[in-house]
Amino acid sequence: MAHDVNLNRLAVFVALVRAGSFTAAAEHLGLTKAMVSQHLLRLERELGATLLVRSTRRMALTEAGAAFHVDCVQLLEQAQAAIERIGDQRSKPGGTLRLTTSTDYGTAVVAPALVEFRRLYPALHVDLVIDDQINDLIAERFDLAIRIGWLRDSSLRATRLGSFRQQVMASPAYLAEHGTPRRPEDLAMHHGWIAMSALATPLRWTFTRGTSRRLVRMRQVMQANNAAAIRALVLAGAGVSVLPDYLVQDDIQAGRLQALLAQYRLQEGGIHAVYPDPQPPAKVRAFIDFMRNRLAKR
Image 1 (tube, rainbow, N blue to C red):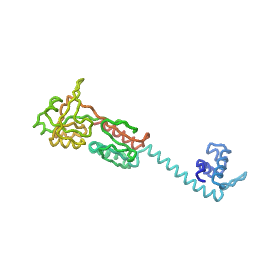
Image 2 (image 1 turned 90 degrees about the horizontal axis):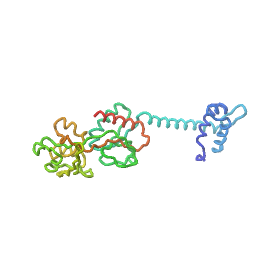
Image 3 (image 1 turned 180 degrees about the horizontal axis):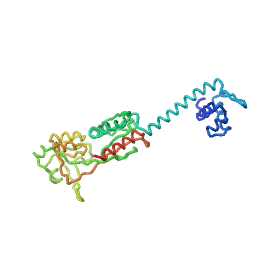
Image 4 (image 1 turned 30 degrees about the vertical axis):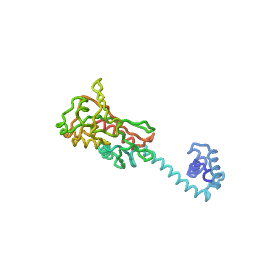
């Protein structure tokens, strides 16, 4: 009737055998001698077997008790090892960090960051999944996701890592042919817009300058479903579009793309770490801190 056995009594039994007497076991466990005796009696009753024979001066294991003691020691050692492994996961990064993020941000930012992160924790394994869909972190066993933009309401935990600017971009060749816009309204009247189809309102953009706000509806010539594809179209001179700063910094410095209407601002987007565990393990906490510090230096 193993389901009726109180497993806490196993530790008392092992301590009693190790101590060699009820008095010594009671002192070690912080119990009374009577309580130690009661634990043993109840364990024997639950097992239906005598584990110890005792007199006023000595005690000895029965054959069943000796075999049971060996098994109990192994069980307690395994339990202690399991507890220590959990403690290690809480205190130092280890195991596999499984995370997901979008194609453009994952390629441009997260993948290079993971290379640096692993130099700090070389024993850590990494499983990066690039996907523009919103993954189910619990069902797909992700430790965390790096999500860009504006978070949906959910039961998941989220930590803000930083933000990114959105910038209107065009190639020099396109501007040479179509001219450079001076006002947000010029974009709607004289330029072809490459729309981000994944957005709720891909053709409506609000430009802010000081206290002035201008809502402009663009004229679409093409659309794509992620920022990396839009960048490729803008680089090829297909039109004008909004791109995140993390994706175009190198292009601007190399002269491949030009930022337009720099005196105006578009709404900034957030960069968040989202995770299901209310008490995330050390590997997740370490990566969140690493990314927050890395983004603060950009």
